[in-house]
Amino acid sequence: MSSLVVFGANGATGHLIVQEALRAGHGVTAAVRDPSAFRAVPGELRDAPLAVTRADIRDLGAVRSAVTGHDSVISAIGPRGRHADKLYSEGARTLVTAMRACGVRRLVALSSSGARRDDPNHPLWYRVVARTVMNELYGDMRLMEDIVRDSPLDWTFVRPGRIVDEPPAGTYRVLDGANPEGGTSIPRIDLARFVIRATGDKRWSHRLPTIVR
Image 1: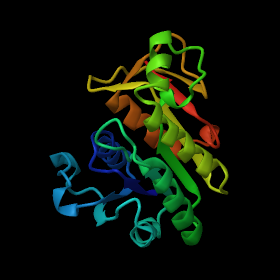
Image 2 (image 1 turned 60 degrees about the vertical axis):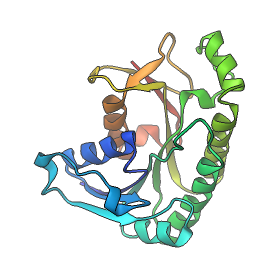
Image 3 (image 1 turned 135 degrees about the vertical axis):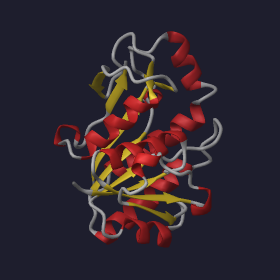
């Protein structure tokens, strides 16, 4: 098994990613802004190889320290509301610089199905929302993707549909760079499990797996 560092590890999806990585036998470092606020993992995982470290995604020194010594990086960062305020793009620049300095190449990052503005498989209402209400957020996600694409990292951007807190579907559909037709959502737990599998799956290297049930 490999050693992973997860940024955004105290968010709803990031925390599940941490749990699923531990269940899969990986060593995990949860990189969070405030380690004292990190939520405990379930009891059966209390003895799993988990470390918690302080690292703001915009702080190059802290990110470099968190990344050092790991095999792969997972980014599950996200803003609290609908405005990115450059979180994704500035985080991407920090990660690229830190990972190159540390010699860590593998990055799996969460983006969104909505990052592709011209996806014909999105319903018309969603395309309207993506170009208006969510335009700033998705625009910063696209910039994040561009920044990482232009780097030598071994990257994967996982683009989920609407993330829902529902039991795992167990089955879902994934296309590279396009939303599977008719799909709009994905249970958060299925997304977390896919992210963990993608870290070691070379099929998704330099790809944009778009995942819905």
